[in-house]
Image: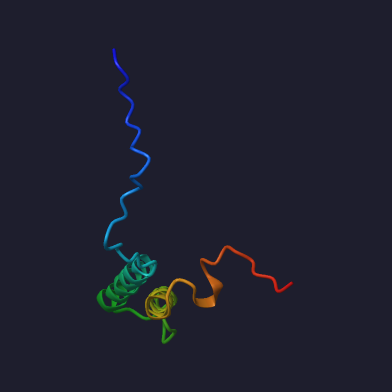
Length: 94
């Protein structure tokens, strides 16, 4: 039973990949909000009923889905640091 440890030589450092995949934090918002909006729009079109001239409350779900997808599109364009979201360091000027 010899020494079977996998300790690298002192001259070799960690291998860094040449290309790091960019992680988009907006994909979930875009897909989730878009699917919610489409789902409620299907309910609105297929239901085809009104409550005596009153607007159907299903439009609220459609509007929320559009707003979530809009936030995802905004974060896709501006990046994950938009509105300070994802910034966990508090930077103080001393």
